[in-house]
Amino acid sequence: MTAIDFTSFVDRLATASGETILPFFRTALAVENKLSRGFDPVTAADRAAENAMRSLIRETFPEHGILGEEYGAEHSDAEYIWVLDPIDGTKSFISGMIAWGTLIGLMRFGEPVYGMMHQPFTRERFTGDSGAAQYRGPGGPRDLRVRKCESLSDTVLFTTSPLLMNSADRASFGKVENKAKLSRYGGDCYAYCMLAAGQIDLVIETEIKPHDIVALIPIIIGAGGIITTWENGPPQAGGRIIAAGDARTHAAALELLKA
Image (cartoon, rainbow, N blue to C red):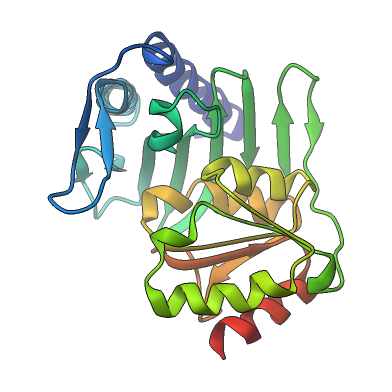
């Protein structure tokens, strides 16, 4: 599988999922709740898009594994495993907001090697392979690069919502938030891509699943950023995640999160 073959195939996955999702966006869409307590929505758009991507993977790379949010794992012992989140940010999606996207990641021997975040409504694609990261969209193609940010007092910080955190983690997050220049909520996968694009400086989350993060790791690293767990470990298994554009703010935030 050459780099050109792989890039072309990921674009096929993104196109297929986007064409499946867009007819549902900003319509009177039925929403199911996956939780008996709390709210974790799923729609026909999520399921149809994941099915479309799974079908293409099975046809093209039958020996590959797949891990998706809606339909779980298959061939989980394969060398290559595709990690799919058809709509990351379903709550934004069902609200008609644009802070959502399709996440397509690939792991080899358990390590993330390529990722794409596709926002079909805005026609944007963010990609990375941990060596470089690129943007394609209405404004034309360009390389993605994080920005420097020496101090927490200069940071723009994002999280999807502190209400998704348990009380102890919310208190730890608050210590970082109190130091930041600006704190904003929302964004899901889009916030990580804005970090890679040099628009924001920190993203701090909890309760993250592999399908939420695997595709974003090669984009963040490829753009020159750093992404770990709160324990400063590898992030691909999910959990409590921190992404930063500058290693100095990453280290400073980690100190507060651990305190």
